[in-house]
Amino acid sequence: MNANLVLIPGDGIGPEIIGSAAEVLRIISRKFNHTFSMKEADAGGCAIDRHGVPLPDETLKACLESDSVLLGAVGGTQWETLPGHLRPERALLGLRKELGLFANLRPVKLQKVLAAASPLRQDITDRGVDVLIVRELTGGLYFGERGRGEGSMGPYAYDTERYSVEEIRRIGVVAFEAARKRRKKMCSVDKANVLESSRLWRETMHVLKQEYPDVQYSDMLVDNAAMQLIRDPSQFDVMVTSNLFGDILSDEASQLTGSIGLLASASLGKGKCGLYEPIHGSAPDIAGKGVANPIATILSAAMMLRMSFDLAQEADAIEAAVEAVLEQGYRTGDIAAGGLSVGTKEITEKIIEALEA
Image (cartoon, rainbow, N blue to C red; front, side, top):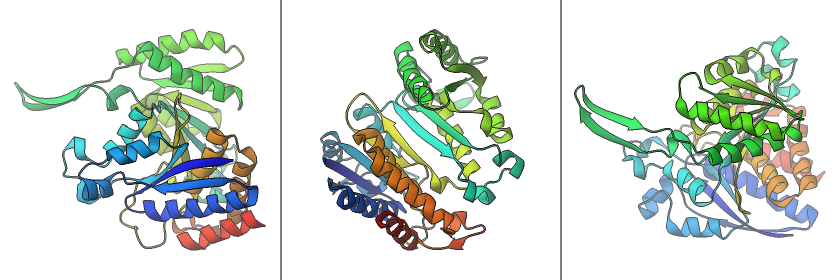
């Protein structure tokens, strides 16, 4: 097949980890006789420095015309004092909105070989960690009305949480369909005891669940869900929740695997183009040192092959290569407990060796 891909390295360690993923994709293209045309584009802090805005028009145009987008990371301390509309993170929000990417899928799976890197007790990890968090991505608090003003107690700021029935229903469909392909169990996370938006969320999910009688459904308040993820993550299969809650819970869940540097994500919508990225940030403190963990980005590329192009065999090959290298004991510094610590380049080379074998 032929596919046009846009690679957005971004900031911090972004160029290093995107470079690793691009190398892996080149091996896949040669091994399986595909053509991946890869074009780099600016977004985030580097785009602010070069173009004055976090998401240049030419980058957005390239993404809209592509078959899929692979992104590294955006952000850094040098841009933290900029006004909100010029922060690097606005590039992500803009891409999600303009590409219509309303569903974010974040798989959280603990590899047995990395159990020692997890902060959980062994009796908990022995039960297994394999959760898919489905996060609504283009609504809620991050896209609601916001502003500042003056009141009787001085200056104030506000952000608005707003969801429509259709926004809730469509993310629910994604989660229910995902559950059908896994262990047929789904938990909807909200704050319905306090928030009106969560009450509508729960009402809508309860209507939708009637269409999926084969999926075991439950509700859970977000504070309890945060606790239960630590106490016994094995109880969860698919979790579906709002933009804000999903952002927080998926980062919490990432630590169950030992490192946020291991977790991939996919952002999908109704169109053909998806956005794939590791869930970690730009890690400016280690940028350029050659020690960043590229595995999450490489696994994001595997998700892209599977979900955007139906290339399951190719995705399986990447995932198997990553697993084989971990089984051999190779680790980047963030997961080095009990293994051989190597750099970004070295672990990428080992994954490529496993792919070619």
